[in-house]
Image: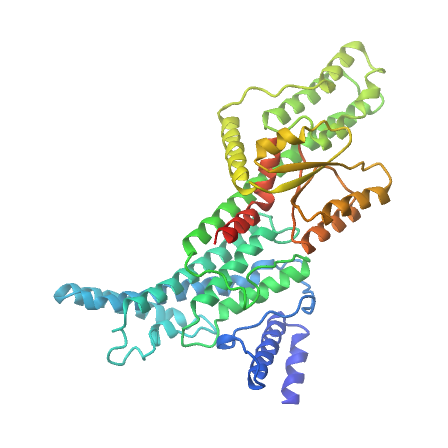
Length: 491
């Protein structure tokens, strides 16, 4: 045994799959030994999550995608869902008669043959849903003569496999779109955790001790949460299993979030491109001899593109990019100065086009959703001293019971700022924090960690402190969490 372990550990140095297998074996053996000692073991030998911080941070090659380890999961879960449905339909053959039953039986037999042929290419796949779906071996008399409730349970298992397959496929699509560049988004990891946990709950009566796909997704989640220091506090423990009868709703939420992530990335890329154009023309105007009328006109065109894309002229990054022109306006020819003064004056956004109207509709929907989710909650809005915000009116528009305005001077003493933030976080009445100032990275990370430890929702506000803009960011960043809290309260 010692020799075998040494060989495995030597192989683990260069093989991530071997490391994953050893971790799985370690947790499994620990669970089984607890059971032998009289403790409560994991049902079906399912993996118990390791303690936080105990999983080694994985190191991936530059050309290796995060989701490479999930390719097999996608194939297996798709296969298992189809296999479950074959047995569910075979149960229903008893309701058919004569030629109709023979035709259905022939079709099911063909589908089963195709599945069994495909099984040869799927490693670590136990075809229990074909061989022993309802307790008896499939070739035994009465193997499919079971109550409808048993068939319905197997249909739920099929739905859970389908949902996990969809979640894995969306993960790969999001990574291909560049959304995983700095790590998987936390909301998506929550939904993936829910999908694997729902599958685990659905197979509680299955004739197997574990499921390879639930285990592999769980281990993948542990790797990513450890590697990127993301805390997922739901559906990662055996005493916090997800509901397995809500697959349709979960698939809808996965699709909605994926679409939002893709749209937000597209919007951010467009904003970045437009901001680069503005900075380019500003730099050209600021260099000696570059302040020409044509360059000023080019900057004006770039700003029209910014406003036409529905971006806010009060955006902090845009304001900072234009800041240098305020002094330059006194040093240039009058015709150039006139254009620059027009650029620096507040610009009214154009009337909504049909494209902009779609954005307005989304904003209205976000505002309606937020009113439902924050009803009865007290929020804290952290804003710069120069911002004139009517907290009472804002609370009324957002539907919050109260919004406390906390002035945060990012240019003031750090100690005073830290004390004010800590005092706000310690207030047990506030459950939602709206961060309308730009903190330094160290301060921001400390604030974020404090919110996570206290299980408080916080939202970064990169744009204006208006009700529609805040509602959009709330739905984009923590809407999934507020919805979950609301559903838990209702239940």
